[in-house]
Length: 245
Image 1 (cartoon, rainbow, N blue to C red):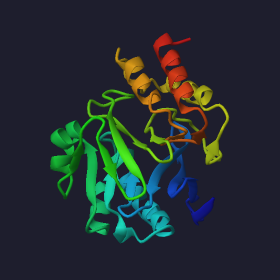
Image 2 (cartoon, rainbow, N blue to C red):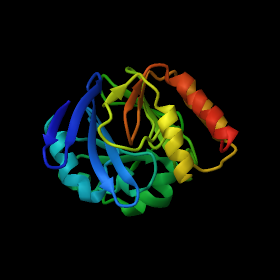
Image 3 (spheres, rainbow, N blue to C red):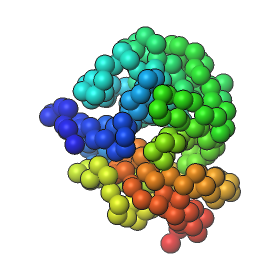
């Protein structure tokens, strides 16, 4: 792990071949310690998944620059329209002249076509996009965990699922990557906040993701999980559909 900003604690860690987790710890008034993660895929056409909030842009840009020239960035992608997902989207488009927003068809239609300073590239459910050696695949997962336009992305060569707000863990100082339990801490956080939708499609959507057999779950808040991602996604489905304890 490399700390790229001593004051904020922003750090970079390679979680899979040429895939880097950028993480910034924060203290949120009324909510306690938390972390914001972005993921950089370095390839012929580099991709950033999540932008971080707009106010965090200088920190994330500094971290990206520690790995590759920011101007090379080709795609900026995200799960759904929310500040920590895409709040600094236009700042990235300004910093990287060839960069294009990459999102699902619903997000492109209802939000990003208007909000972004450059027209988005919309991906259909199941569509693949080569980046070079890496290939990403988009999955529509409406309301998983929230947002009509929600989608998630798998990098196929490494089995890395960029899983957005699934498995959110509170706190800071967590290891960048773990093979231990993240479901327990994430369920504790979920049940306290109730930020998941109550869609009856949840189990089917989680099974759709589990069928990809991910080996790494790149979580937006907290530690990345390395191991049997399919088993963990199905365990989340069981916990989610069981309701409150």
